[in-house]
Image 1 (cartoon, rainbow, N blue to C red):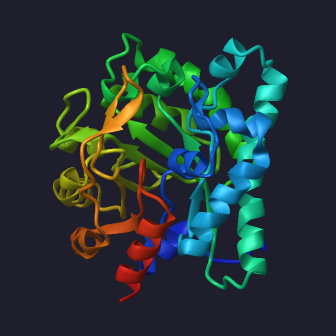
Image 2 (cartoon, rainbow, N blue to C red):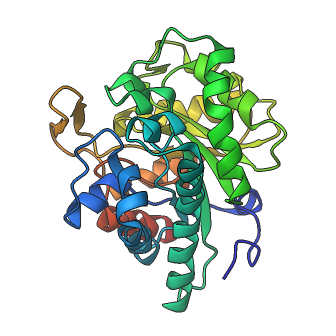
Length: 307
């Protein structure tokens, strides 16, 4: 199977709802892998690529149709801190797409007949800092500086031919503006997904303003939210659909809160598959889960949407 066997993801969103995968890190940790360093799941691109493929496969077999690559925290700067040069870092970025493709082929060999797509993850600048900045934004960098940071790895990921670029967990409208500039002209569609608190970005901008940046961006096939509380989804879906007229993407966390200082999750799960029908009715067309949402929950989402 290749990505060209099926309609484009944009065409699929025009006619129905597509199920995303869940959290990469929690699935890798459930398989016994230690993600306790600054590269997080991106470390396994170099050390255990087979584990990344297995994680993708688990979600495909659970009912997901889109795999988000393990490149969220993969940057030239982050790899450089570990002594990995630019040539090898570029290879690992491209490998992240290849591993998801491999999982899709294995799912097809196992009998999956539905379309399967690969989304290349582009995490925010704060993910590279590995200090929780992606939940705050306001890095003190200009839009031009952020564009210079993002553009090189986006170009490498685009060259690996994913079906879509996932500009995800964006905390700040300024960074969104930089990302939208960085994907322009690459010939690969993208979705733009903010991490939010209530009806504002983590940096405090109103979502009307934040989503409005993507309204006229031809490259953007969906806008929405991820890595947020499930309770924040309904309001964001309504605003995203109204402001942009585009399909909406949503993949919240389990509802637990990340303690960046202790590097652990606290609180209780508030995510449930019964919520997704309301999200779809409000305009969501790409629906899945982020941190702490595993294959079992994705299977529940797929079942609820099919029903």
